[in-house]
Image 1 (cartoon, rainbow, N blue to C red):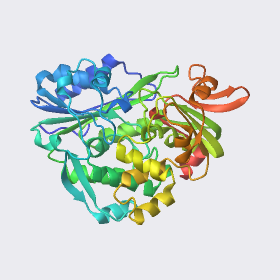
Image 2: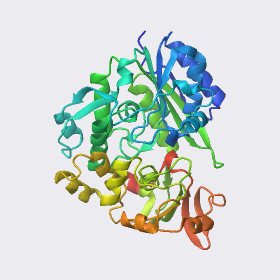
Image 3: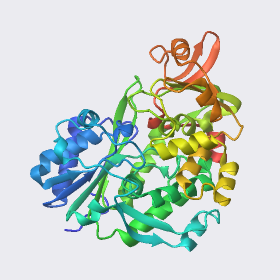
Image 4: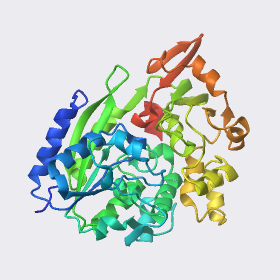
Length: 427
């Protein structure tokens, strides 16, 4: 049975979908596509624990039972999840179903997006083809349904997260991830963030249409936003096999997850939950998601008690330590010289993590020394002192005054994008 472009659609900025209603709606969508006998689920990993993927996966398990044959968290470049982390994020789903994704070794190539297409969508900034890689289990496991679960939210590489990114990056391979990240960096983070139509999105969608048509994909996409009292609320669920469901979700995410400030913030303080953010590779969402809100000459203070490394694996960690957050022009020079040509994802991260001198970044990291922080190009602050002064428990989301100092506080950068209309529109 062919899966429709959009099987289920519900959402608005005022909607608040309970977990029970979310599970019921998803099961209704699964019923609508007809019987399936061998199902693979691709949920997000623990770095995206607000996506409501636990609710969706448990609903799929309840519905399919033994027909849910495997679950592969879409790790991308991230660290594997521990058993305890899996159990916490996906309660009620047997641990024995979970399979690891190895982005460096366990992938196959489905095809290559032509160089001409990449050059065209990147405005001539990238002159290479793009390998459409996925974990081999996706295509060799004999599945008659591949469930891709996750949240649509503004993203620094692709513009709006999820959809085809979950397949080709979440369970993709090194070459594809490297090149997609570099396309995004070369094109420019500030004109990518929060946009639906971007060069990376065009490349990923091309790959799905041309090379993954035989994969029986069904996307279940949530939109989650702040509930106004320090928590979050599910604002939408969109289920389907094609771009219609994604674009509906992205339109709602733009409404729900982008907060416009009336004026640029002279100082932004971002808190990184220590359970979710262990590295600057992940923690630099604090920079990406607030940079369009920060005034020229302003400061970003990152409260990061859980961060104890730069990269999510040894190789990326070494790249960051060797070169620091050097900015897009220096990263481009390192790529063109061949020095970082084999680590385009690392080069992209060095560009994304820099402000190119427009504002300063101060890291208060619990597990990195002052020398380590300063060696990669950031300013340092003592984590205990910073948390005492800017206690997340005392701060409201948004504008605060702390001992006479005006700050803008972001409790979880993974949930949105903060910008002034002028900078977002001009980027």
